[in-house]
Amino acid sequence: MSEIDAADLTADLIRCPSVTPNEGGALILLQGLLESAGFECTRVDRGDVSNLFARWGRKGHPQTFGFNGHTDVVPLGDEAAWTAPPFGAEIRDGIMYGRGTTDMKSGVAAFVAAAIDYVRDTPPDGAIIIAITGDEEGDAIDGTTALLDYMSHEQERMSVCLVGEPTCPNEMGEMMKIGRRGSMTAWFTYRGVQGHSAYPHRAKNPLTAMARLMDRMAHHELDQGTDHFDASTLAVVTMDTGNPTTNVIPAESRSAVNIRFNDSHSGASLSTWIRELMQEVATETGIDISVDIKISGESFLTPPGDLSALMARAVEAELGVTPTLSTSGGTSDARFVKNHCPVVEFGLVGKTMHQVDECVPVVQIHQLKSIYLRALRDYFAG
Image (tube, rainbow, N blue to C red):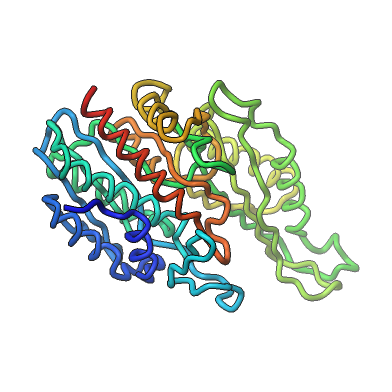
């Protein structure tokens, strides 16, 4: 049978309007393609989220290579600002345009095409698992976590896993992710006593407490970085009171911070620090302060080893580039997979992801498939 053209498959996926949490036909398309190549497929839908699990080969094989990715995409933004149809997969001057071209339908198309071509050409003594979610760009509650729950219940197991997220800042092949920083957000509410601004002693101004707490948090050095991570960061992301007048001291205000943290912290340790600092300011100002904390993911690291070396060799063989091992960037579903097996991320250049006129050079899609195909061959040969 003819090889699967990863660019054509990318275009087909782009034409599926799978804005989170809509499936948009993307998983239906992939399931049909994978089943025709001998993969056993199961829909693992949970809540409003559509997920697809596929396996070629024997269940429980000790050599099982896994791929993880997502077909859901972020909203279009200002559709009038697009110069190409967002779900049209239009190609101009060798560049394909459309929502999800970079993040990450090209990655999904590349590893699905590579996996199908490999098992058709050289059926390995092993197994390949493909786990695709429709909820990476959303709350990520019922996506990859649902797939991993299903795998645990069914005693399915990946030996290693490659997440196909875009990882390269500027040039194809320059960076691989071997870990990610943790991410958490803290929302604060400050409750005082409303009053006339000409008589501040008769009021309790929540804005004073908010400014003091935000200033202390913003100027606190969390750490200076670790062996594989840059220094943790804290950003004040909003300060709100909704007060339209200047002669009223408001009764309530709100603020929030986002923290991206390395492996010298945990979500729990940072939560303790936040609450202690918050209580200090509350005591100093007499303002009641409460906080709601959401930990989106803990920091994690897959130490450099066999899996990262395998992927680096594949990139070097196909592109002549040695990828840097990095833990930079935001979060990804690798934060869930790391509890299951060793995981690394490698994919396209991500400069246009989530932007208007998101796009990818078609040649990069073919390069990515070749890298994934070589990684499969080397993994099962070794």
